[in-house]
Length: 304
Image 1 (cartoon, rainbow, N blue to C red):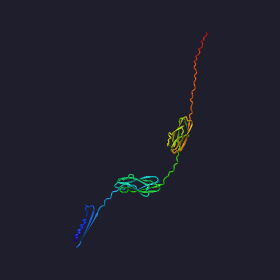
Image 2 (cartoon, one colour):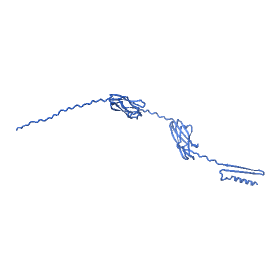
Image 3 (tube, one colour):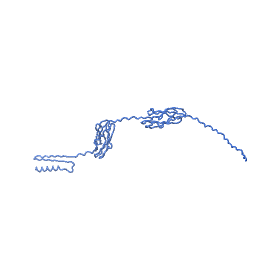
Image 4 (tube, rainbow, N blue to C red):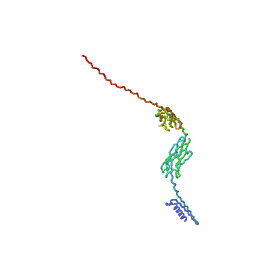
């Protein structure tokens, strides 16, 4: 009887351990039976194992170079370097923010470039700018953040600011704008030109050319209009006209800069043209014409 019970127990255990091809999990059942003359005990144990759901797909933006060194740059300058990424994930990387880390982040700027959305397997390029404000070493880490919370590889940016280079002050340039002649003679009723020349080394600007208020003269600024610029060696011309029957007059032609300071002055003289008395041509006297008749000689007798 005992042998039959033991054989039954072994058969039950082997049947419980055989897997069912239709089940997705694993179930193990063990049965133990003990028989005595007065008591029978049975124990059953069941174990079930299930698989966890797969994790969601996330983008993976990796760097082509983990470090970018800008070298030395004078304070106040700026230089740019590219940051190359590649999406090795199975979904697109959509950047929503730029994360900085480090104690010297103020010296760096990052533009997304074409890394706003990176398809799986595609690459993109962002731009890093180094702009030192002090003469010291600068270092920071930068990463792009995806809308899902994923983060790209962090790139380390470094550079050194050097003292600003102050160029020597250039020698001051000067201009000298003046009239070419200090005295202008203008015959009455006629016009004369006066030339303004910049004989300096810098560009000059004409404020205005003015003539003392005198009815004996009129001024036409012509080419020397207000705010006219004259390059070194360049000239412009004004025209002064003298009135008639004013006698001999003197005036001042003045040249001013845009601030109202007088650059030069020239004297203008109204030269009177002497009046000419018309000359009467001398009268011509004609002598009467006398006809002279030649005398006829008397007849001559010839003596033989």
